[in-house]
Length: 111
Length: 91
Image (tube, rainbow over all chains, first blue to last red; front, side):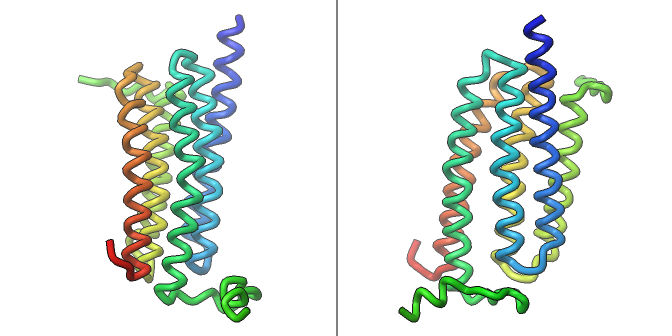
């Protein structure tokens, strides 16, 4: 009884996670410049992985510890990697989209 | 011979993740600059981790989980090294 209930809750979480993956990859293709693409893909895949791993952990309870370790790694490392990549590509000379209105990095340098 | 049961929700999710990887591969192929391709590859890395885990759950193999832990760490290190290279510093 309780295992069936956990199965259904886990499937719901896995469904939410895979929808996040789908929307993130669509945003990766459709967004206009590098920084928009980066935030679309990174935010959605981080949240998607968290939901996905919790869902599978609820379905296979003996794997829950290892899955939480992976979720911890991904949630910790994906934003660090993305911010390092954004800073590096700004210094590499990638321009913002022409309709972007604010550039905090440049403003901070002028102070 | 492994037979795939296409009504299994695990297999359906796995196929959805493969479709996501193909969509991200479009960005890797036509991204105008190098950092665009790197962002695409980063997304594909995260998708590969999720796909490994769902494959392990579908066929009840625990070894895929261990592989996914190592893969997550290595993909993070790869992204940091590429960022360092783009910034123009010494490796």
